[in-house]
Image (cartoon, rainbow, N blue to C red; front, side, top):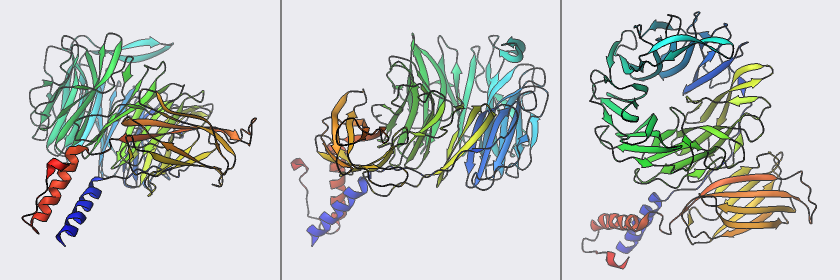
Length: 609
């Protein structure tokens, strides 16, 4: 009896530590035009709260650049007439948005006072109406604001220093901000929902300080920025009293290179910071973690290890969920820019080998990431089709697998996202993406919404070729693909319009490691009934790209190429014991502890494991 209890407990514990492999398509609606203006609409930001969808952007419809706002109350189906928040004769730029319940806050910088000042607008009725104020209103240029909030506490942080002056650019006169050797990081704090503010200087040094980022968690406020040391480093300060006072700034990057443009993510009392670091003509993506809420940081880790230039966007390059950290960037080391993804699933102790998500010959850039628990979504600008499009790749198992690349915009115009995110947001059920589409009809913002419900069956991938001509269902007979263990891949080739299985399919099957080396290379494969089987054994661990190239239908060459194209997925190969000997020992020890109540004299000889 006790032995049955022992093995039952052990089995339950092993199942608890295992995870499922799954990915699928999501049904989506056609993009809708949310700006519908006669001028150029660009530099959008999107945030979502349940059925409320909020958008801010810059719009040139009034003749000068102004900040516009709109909202949807029904999950993005219908948007209200946009509101001009800045509505003045000067140029307004770089709007940033924060929401919490009925409170909506927008900040931007504006040249209407004769120099750049920070403006702030608040709404207490979910964006139905706004009040705005000049938040900086001092003798120096103020620009690049960022906003965050927690309850009634609202924070706006920005660059302060230099001067604004008018220049001529491409035959057009415009205002710009010129650094004069003095620049500080200022933070305005409100504890009454944005009605009144007090401002403090966070950097307060003789060096130049610029480009701040902010994150808030309850009473803790975290700010990172560029600091002009001997080179340039990432500096960081924290507050534990709702922004009333801040710690002395500390140097997080501690580098001999040039460190710029930090991003901040928070999870379970930890602070995660990522930035770009340049040495000579190369740049890499670095990461550092604090396990004591920002008091100290560990040694930086080079995530990209690139021989070229690695770059990140702002705000949406890093995401955290429980003990998992996800990072995306774009890199030109292969000759053109590609999008890379790395993750840590072991309490940020290690990151996996970065994997190339874009995998194409066109330029792929400005990658952004959004997550909803185990669902991971990555979008980017891609020029593979000959014009700019918005591409998406998604995972439903925490980044262990990714489905095929999807073209969200798929139009003849130039569809663009912006280096300041986010242009992607999630709820528990849906994913929202927004981009600027430049066509002969004009420049407008388009929104696409799709469901994020994953397929339930583990080991099942639904793929589609990049040209949309054929679907490929990949059914893997293992929940986990283990190192040096054979896994069978069943490939079913389907007609996209009706889901019927095609016959006499000629295809090639490849698997590449993270460095681009083909570990499986099987050409001239034939699926007579439309179902092909590939037995695969991989001797290494880590992420891999699985590629299926369909050459056409037919018994012999020349094939009918109506059904042809290429598709790919990301898979992960784990060690034979996915959680390591230490993990197995832990499981067994937990089982012993449980059974100790039933049979105190039971002993387990760990030396025999």
